[in-house]
Image (cartoon, rainbow, N blue to C red; front, side):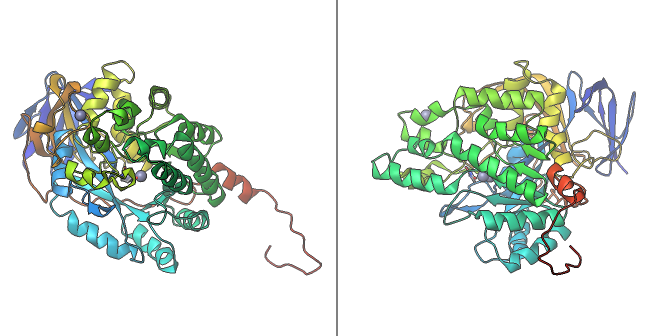
Length: 484
Ligand code: DUC
Ligand code: ZN
Ligand code: ZN
Ligand code: ZN
């Protein structure tokens, strides 16, 4: 079998940094050591050899708000490998009344032209017996994480009783519960009031979704998850209000994880006050960008470990699509891009500033994600036997974010003009060079679906353990109760 050797670099993992070569055969790492030889050599002199990025949160070609997100699996994963990301986890979004497995098949059909590996989360967009049954099938098919929208009232939102039932089912199946945590009732109320008062511009979007709606929903989801005895992953944690709830839960021993987005870390709410309607609307996403205090909180969370991963929520819409919301901010398709930019921007703003070490960078962009989502060590590791999903990172390479040169198919970039120092020299997807010399080496269809196994039911929240082990007094009303 033909082999590839990456020579002369420094391996940087979530744990440590050391100089060694990496030998790859048949898509996996077969040897790590000094002076290795192979059929093909990739020069990593002056570079870091890191696990490829895993983006745990994307929406490719997703039907949403009357349109489809503009990047599909082809352009989305092209952007991914150009930015050093080698695995994306997309959300299967069943239509109302549609079975989960039917929806999953649609997602499999959409992903046949991917350039790197991918996996799926399942979204619980409606509730009924069919969903309850299909959840077991979803787990068997490797989709073991289930997202619940607490916002998007009248569309995707699930109510608390449905969420509680679903969370219990997820727990019983050994899965991971996920939430988009925003109080959808309050958002709907604020939106109606703002529009009625004539606040129709994109800044109204931010006013309609203050940090409190996220903090409230995060607290509620944590308590409901605790009662259901299920671990919880809070997507796009954007503010201190939500982070504070996650910190407190973790400190109490609950298995709760928070995921800031690269957008919320580096872009703030002033973007919505730009006089240019297009500029502001292009940045409309949920949750919206916050102020500097919230940004500091997110960075602190990554540094201390109270927040675990950095994602993109890549859900890109063209300017034309955004203009559907001219005159009514609630009709602006929610979403921004970032697949190509997540690693370079986090390196520039996180590592080059001293806020994160290179090892912490690997943890929050890859290894923690692989562990939480049960893909480790196949993904997220530089270890013998792991997939050769790697990025050879040149810390001296400079660049500037520009829509003109990006792989995404939209016509702008929310990070436009950001200065970069630290970019991929090569990106490898299961040993195949997918990006080299500043260019994607396309091979649509190379990417494979990566199923994820459930976790044993021991992965329970602390309070559930206490409940299970404590005696529970019952009033027996004089009737002998059996089995209580
Ligand atoms: N938020 C977005 O901005 N877009 C997609 C869905 C979401 O929750
Ligand atoms: Zn969301
Ligand atoms: Zn502008
Ligand atoms: Zn999302």
